[in-house]
Image 1: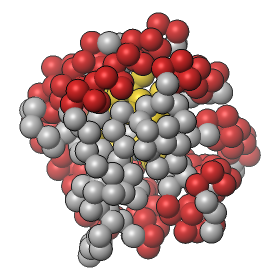
Image 2: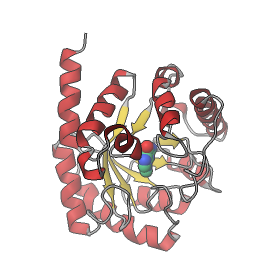
Image 3: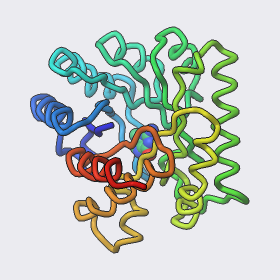
Length: 257
Ligand code: 9MG
């Protein structure tokens, strides 16, 4: 899954793909580099980020989706928590929903049920503005897994098809470095639940903490983490650096024992 942020303030590439024509070019480049999904987001979820209005988010993402979908052969995922954006994005041609709030906003489950597209349910403790203020867990892997499986069950009871659900432990969303590491080591247990698992670590603070690198120098660390996530059973990795990650995954596929 290649990341296409159409925000002026995303944590790792804020503003870089903000214009419509640049966004389109970048989406096509990610597809050519091997992305199977392009994830478009119009609201930053980096720690400390302020929420954007519905109209602002619609204005950012819908023209890009409309422009991009006819030239892409891979599906577009809409990274949003707002049911109105989900509906407008799918009407504009998006084929998947990526929700860091796991459909917890009013009307989001019903929108996803009505739209009938695959949905990624992500775990987050708190909300982006304050999520890194002293997050606490007794057993991060167990608690995240329990949250995700309960959310999946509630969504299925509301009519979401099990085959359309992807789970994501939400690395960096209300987790310290140690909690992120413990969570990473517990990935096989989440994979064992039977749902496809999505992992997003690309260029995040945990890569910076482990390597001492600034955001744009976190590519090797991010690729290594993506390859290890796939070896742990992840089905989808959400990344900025598609070509480099694709190379690493090709090598993993060929050389793993
Ligand atoms: C939008 N976004 C930022 N980080 C993410 C992650 O780790 N997973 C998913 N599903 N979305 C993310």
